[in-house]
Length: 287
Image (cartoon, rainbow, N blue to C red; front, side, top):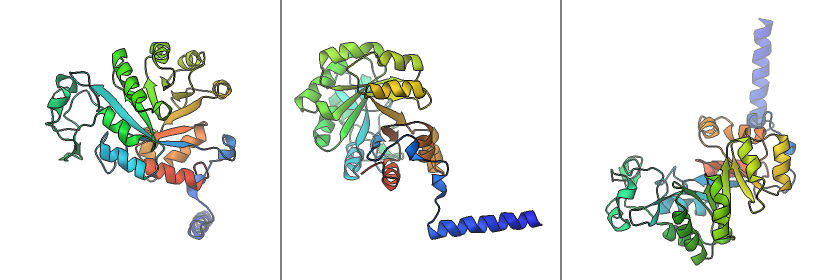
C-alpha cells in the first residue's frame, strides 16, 4: 500500500511540474551541450517537400516548404523517354499519379495527360520538371536532388540546368555511386555533391576527397574517431529521421530528440519538417 502511495504521489508531482511548465518530458536524457555549442545550427530538409498537405514532389509541396522557412527541399529526379528531367520517386506512375506505366515509357509531352494524386485523390497538378522547380526555388531555399538513376548523362543535364540558373551554391546533388564522384566533380567543380555512405569503409573512402563538404550517413555508421575526421575535413553531416525516428515522432513521442541524442548532425531530413523546425528553435539549434 505504501509503495502504491509513493507511485501515486510521484506521478502527481511530475504531472504538476508539467502543468507548471517546469519540466518537459521530451528533454529526458537530452543534453545538446554534449555535441553542440552556442551558435550551432541544424538545418531542416523536407523529404519530397511538405507532402503532409500537398502531393509529394509537387510544386505546391515545394512552395509550402519555402513559405514555412524550411532550409532544404529534397526532390527525386527521373528521366523521361526523351531524356527530360522530372520529379518522381517511384519507377512507375501508379502510386502518385493517374498514370500506370513506368515513367521512362513516356515523353515529357505525353506525361502531361496525367495528374498528381494526393491521398489517393486526383489533383490538378502535373509532374513538374527540374527546370520549373529550379526557377521556383532560386534564392528561396536549397534543393537536394536525389537521382533515381546513375546515368552520367542525366547528371550532366542537371548540372547544365543548375549552371544556367546560376544555382551552384543552392543545390546539393546526392550521389549513391561513390565511383561517380570524381567524374561528376570534374564536369562541374562548383556544384555541391553529397555522397551517401551507410558503411564505415565508405565514409573513409569519401574522406579522401578534398572537394566534398557534406556527407549523408546512417546515424550509427560513424564513431567518435570518424566524427573527428569528418569535422577536421569541415564536412557537414546529413542524417535521415525517416522511418524510425519519424514514426516515433508521429506517435507523439520524442523521436527527434532521440535522434539528436545519438550523434552530432548538421542536417536532418524528415517527413515532418515544420514540426522539426519548431523543435529546433525551442532548443536554440535553429534561428
